[in-house]
Length: 410
View 1 (cartoon, rainbow, N blue to C red):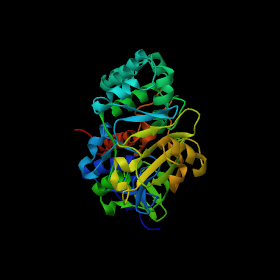
View 2: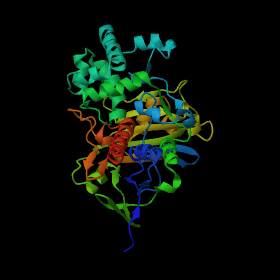
View 3: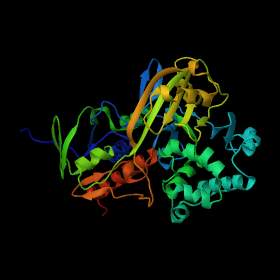
View 4: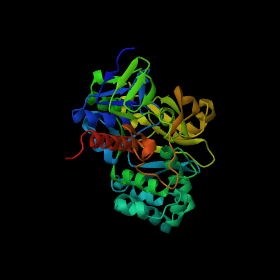
């Protein structure tokens, strides 16, 4: 049997967590090798080209309010942005609910939107300000409950919860009961208040590709499945490697298989249907929220925010459901949301993501341990929060733990 190939660090998984760890360790001068079973980097954050359109794996967006956005070269991503807010439909009429700081012309319409009484609207605005600008330690010290219970405690009424908050957050949390931790939702809302939501010109895959370039093409090994992990060694289908530090940065199921001490799962799922319209029915890029009783969580003309998602002037529409659906089951609902005829929608493709992300139920487990001892480390959004921010933050923590072990102070 040939001798194991040596490295300073082996990272298993080229998703955003693994690549975030690998870039830091590479920048520190360590010999880092990354193994990825798939044929692309980025993990669940990826895209493909289809008939000239850029199709992300499900409806994904990047929020510049994430603290770990600072790790990326944002200008190089050439982000195109959605307007802050959403469109809600009540009794067939569309209402714009937007951030008045960024869209002053939408103040009157937002104030008149059917989101409850004036007091309840003020309560919604007060919540947004508290989450957006309150100190993070204070947010994390607040009594923890479910998101829905916290909204009601804040005085936000049924109309705002059911017509705006529930469908808006369902598209992010991939659950519509608002059972997610109130502390996580506070942190999430903070990112929406402070940042902008957009799409890279080349698709969401551009985020992972940017990080992978920093590691080096000769250090990222695609289509290489890791079969087993042990302290100081990694066995792949092509051979074995020795390294004093091994970082497991796979999806939760694979992490639990490679490291039996790790408990991780990704129970949230989403199905996204992509359609093409001759032109956009909207004057500005806004997400249209689903309505109570329907299957649709949200739908958006993504090419309004990022024109390079379309090869021509046609509009690319992305629509998501939390349960598996066939395109024909939701076509009429998608058309009604955009105020077009079902026959106007040309079905491009549908993407089902069965293990899209972990849950974040109370009590919220922020910063779960990444150092397992014996030179084994783990990172991923299951160690922090179920988001791009959580994945990248856990990768950064894993890198710091590795560096502390291989280069102890003093």
